[in-house]
Each structure stands twice: as structure tokens, then as C-alpha cells.
Image 1: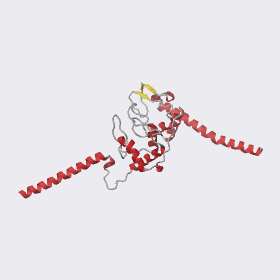
Image 2 (image 1 turned 90 degrees about the vertical axis):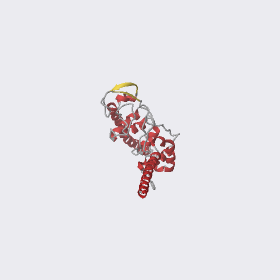
Image 3 (image 1 turned 60 degrees about the vertical axis):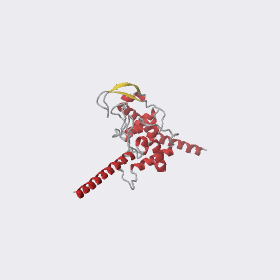
Length: 261
């Protein structure tokens, strides 16, 4: 009996030793994230991620225009790690001009800073975690069907990006599988948000599998023309065909003219 109690106490002690440092590191990470938030994010998103609902004047900041601007930013309380990870790792944040569409650009923070900021934002309230997609488990054919149905109207059928009213859907050639999964759950800017009920994780895996394929598609038997879509490709074909026909007509006309002379 005493031996069993001793083993139990030893196990509890070992667990405390193992868990203690991890919790301390997590706490340090959140504190560092809070410091970074106060330095880079608070001007737009407010104290404790409460958001800014009415336009407020803000000065220059990292990556922001040096001119004074008005900013309105959403609350970060309850968005979880998912949104913070997506916006920071794509370089969407910090914005140069608050209120305009974010574009993929150079990532301002290093990996450790991003982890700290994500940990702090996640600590502001319960929210979705960072997804872990498995595109190798997906089906490319199924992904093509899903992409055509839900995404091709804006991003083009081979994910080269496009144009819609008041927005520019970006190409997906630089998007990682995790970033695609995050965007589907967030719905950044004018993109619709897809819940797990609308688009289960297995469908997300297939959709990402197709996007990964579309980055280097098999153009067997065809001329890709930059994968800009069937309509522009058709126009280029007609243009080239028309030029060839005009050239043939000129040659025939010249020969007929020479024979008549």
C-alpha cells in the first residue's frame, strides 16, 4: 500500500515538473504578445482587443502611411488564434491604410513574434483554434468540383485571382494549406465564410488538394497562356487565328495580283 502511494506521489511530482515549465512558457508568450500588441496593434484595435467602432485619428506606425489617418477596427475578443495567425502570416496586417482591402505582402513579424501575438489574441476570449488540414487525404477531383462551385467565380478556375466589385480576389499560388483552411473559416474582406457544417474538414482537404494541384497543373496537349482562364485564352486564340487568316489573305491576294499582271 505504501509503495503504491509512493509511486503515485512520484508520478504527481513528475507531472508537476513537466507541466510547470510549459505553463510558464505559455504565460511568458502571452505577456510578450501583449507587449507587441501594445506596440503595434493597439492604435487600431484598441486596448485589450476591444476594437474601434467609431473613426479615430491615428498617427504613423509600422507599415502604415506616415500621414494621419482615421481607423475603425473590429474587436479581437473571441476571434481565437485562427484569425490572428491568418492575418499575421499572410502579411495582411499591419495595414498601410486602415479601411482598404488587405493584400499579401512581406510578413512584418518573425515566427516567434507571431506565435506570441497569436497567443495573446487567443487569450482575450474563447475562439477557434488554428486548423490542421491534411490535403494528402483529399481528392483532387472532388476539390475541383468544390472549387468550381464555391471559389472559381472570384479566384478563376485555376486560382489565378480575378476582379469583383470593390475587391480584388488574390491568386492562391502563395497560399499555404493552413492559410487556405483559415481563410475558408474566416471569410476575410468580401470572401464568404464557410462553417464546418457548410464545408466539412474532409471537403476542405479536397479543396486544398486541388489548389495545390492548380499551382503546377498538367498542361498536357495545350498552351497554358499563364492560366488566366478560358475566356482570355479563347480571345487570344481568336486573335492569333484572325492574324493568321489576314496573313493568308494577303499572300493569296498578292499572288493573284502578280498572276494578273
